[in-house]
Length: 519
Image (cartoon, rainbow, N blue to C red; front, side):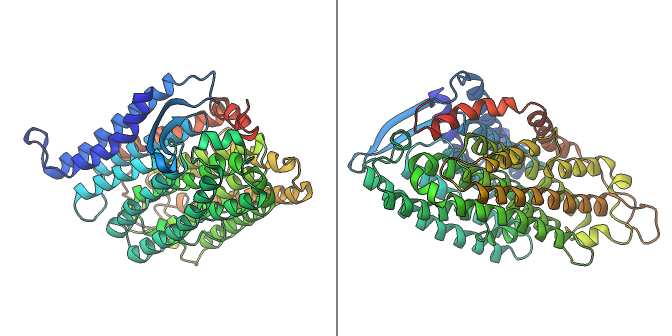
């Protein structure tokens, strides 16, 4: 188990270095480009297999205990250690990250985005995977910061070199927002480590903030929270996200929504809740307020983009929907209750699966029509996917109803539990305020259903034979698309019908985390 976790974190970096080397003569296949793309599929596939093996070897009877741990002194002068481990909170995120990177590598093997060398693309993809996997597995504050920052450069280049229109501006906006947030976050992490005498996240969580004064906790929550809120992204620090998603290639959007946004909310749960509980209790009502505003704001922005004549970009619409969905995650965290935090963690996974699938589908639509403009896709008669490409239309309709939180699918449970947490927040928090946030969140679910059903109606319905309609011939789902999307559909259904699989992992770990390290 210890070796497996270390291998999962090291393999992407080794694979990235190997991707830049010339392919051995016997492995070139039809061309060196095909060889390096096959290399990306192989490396991410091996990492996924190792993550599955780690999951099977995980002691599911003790998910609150850190397992597969490594603890080695790295910088003795600062008491910084290479401390690795997983529990019921981080394991699902680690597994989902490995799955999404494998599916993106598989999709790119058949549909590589236009841009420079495939070698650089595969290498950047693997470096990005190393950073995201490490973020969910490290247990030292400074290592967390390094892993958190490691993803910025590869994502910047994926947007700037392989993206679409306005990619340079979107890439710069992405990196400037996240870098500025990270600088402030680093100050907060140093404040905690230097005042408590350790950067070890397990020791800090067990201490439960007793070594930190209330003022120190407030400053730490403010500084670290800003950095995490930018990455989440929380309203009003979200403005980089729609531009980045609109310009990014399909796999870049999938990974940005499915994995990178989760790094911010994971930091709230792993660091701020157990290490600075006093500071979090002070700021929780404000976090809940920003979350509630983000839920409604994201939904209203999507409704505006979905309206006929507004020239709304479908990728941009899904990006704004992420602002709303991540608002539910932040609301669950703000309640500081086991119910709310479990809902936040469940919504994290559900959003990664469903929104990743949505971005895959929109990318496929853009490939077929040459645009993601909703008015163009709808046209006079609608894109009529049900008639022209019925399987593609069925996948899009499924992803939409999953995203709006239909009971029986994964999107339902996280949002419901977050609202339940707001109904009865932690002791010391204003119940009237959180009841207001709950009501606003409930309104957000109705607005979400509204804009997603409008999108389905405009894109999937219509008469394919009507005068002025686009050509009837339209490629339906290809074999590689089916292979990349089906696992996400299956897991969305599984998590919706059997939520105990995920909640059984997270709940004991959350209970221990909120109890200050005591089971």
